[in-house]
Length: 206
Image 1: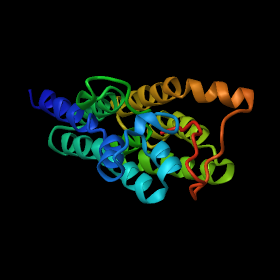
Image 2 (image 1 turned 180 degrees about the vertical axis):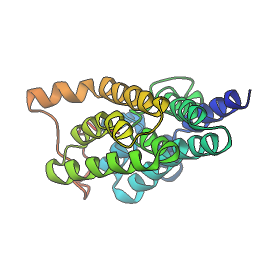
Image 3 (image 1 turned 135 degrees about the horizontal axis):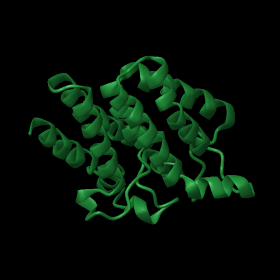
Image 4 (image 1 turned 135 degrees about the vertical axis):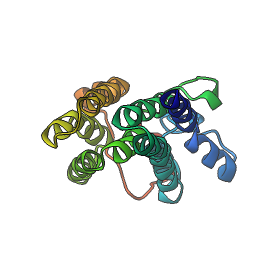
């Protein structure tokens, strides 16, 4: 019963559309109508700069981290995994957006792993940062970083629910980035600029 409560809490936390609410609150614009239309921090950063994008990334990370950590501490790794997965699903199909398309789960997945298995989340985050700085493709960094989650979980000897969660997260991130993969193949994916350049409408990974 307690695990079910944490799963519900995870889904509700994940459903908080940080990008939509931050941009609407400060800019009076629906982030879904600009840039790539994605609600994640990457699209917000591309369109409005780091002062809006970074808080959204942090909030999206927190909404995966908090329920996953709480469930892990109170019940165990299995409950933490389920709460983290629920947060990811909430970010993808948010309750507060009436289950319309949400974000691509990258920051929320990272937060969930920092809550359930901090070493795994930290190692994958390091992979993400290294690839992003080297290539400046947020999509490539996200896909590869997520793909390493089950590997790190296995190498660091976490219990099987964490390894399985890594596989689930990796597949989910890959599927939600299939449009980015098509653009990469066609040579049309845009590199990320840390400094905003006048209202870019480039496709985002968020």
